[in-house]
Image (cartoon, rainbow over all chains, first blue to last red; front, side, top):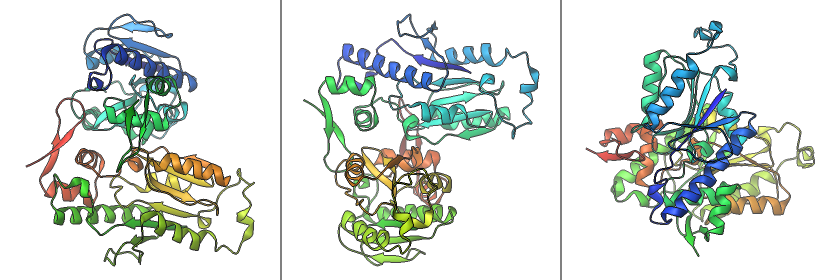
Length: 224
Length: 224
């Protein structure tokens, strides 16, 4: 299985700018990327970072400065179309066991709660396309085995991806995971990292003085 | 398995008051409760609604007007302590199959995305305590099999419940589900219902004029 982790080096995590300055956002986004790389490796797979510019991350990096959807689709073009074993291209065998080798996974770099268990559920899910939704209608991680499926990350991409799969005749399996649904974009998301995370991103936040703030309703964060 | 669904009839969903008036919040909360009852029944279990006042909901209702934690703990006192088969009280058998009959589940009434599949993963999870976290450090659903465990829903209850379980010597299994993590409290949560829900709550929102609003970042809702 090819596992791609798209990563933008340009002004990362801009929606955290009210709680983190630019250097801090860069460092925090790198910590989250390190956690995602580690979680992917914990499944037995070797991730490739698909970055908008060269970056040192302790994993192979492919640089593509085009938009997220364009870069991911170019990678899908190269990978899904290349198989020489056409028996895996018979999409009538929906009930058969799927082989991880015959797939491309795309896992967002800001899934600071990702674990090998959560990613393993995605990687081993049936379906021509397996999707872990993100909060707010996004698509945080997916596995593609169907040559007719391409991504479109703009807007409510989860709903769009269901439509694209249906149009391509590709079966879809939803992977229901809070850990994979939690991309870290906004200040309120930091509480999730402090509650559930135990990797570099959670450590970085604690070192930067963030702590849980239990008021009424959902728990937020304070910076000391 | 006893499955309790706590439901407050007093000013429900107050944090939705900027988008729904009091009558609408009451109707919407009843639609979500109906969806939760249906999802529990889909697992083969028969839910009991633990309500703060008498209410007609198409399921058995037990009225307890005390606080959520007090009412749930009273129910746990009655259920977990009552078994006459003491063999199930040996908590050294962590590897053994657990019997649903020997457990109490507590499922919040505002889990509008709950499905039989998601709840079944919780009900069948190993552990003296199985917990589905809610966003913001909450506890949206749990299964209790250990007589020493009691709930405390105040504040960051997920973290507190881990501590309470550890203090009681109870093993804990995390159930990682976006559907169970999504309690519907705030306007932004309505987008999750429109994206992923297909029950009464989603239908109620659509009838009330709500639709997805895809802007930058996460998808929100608009009311037409």
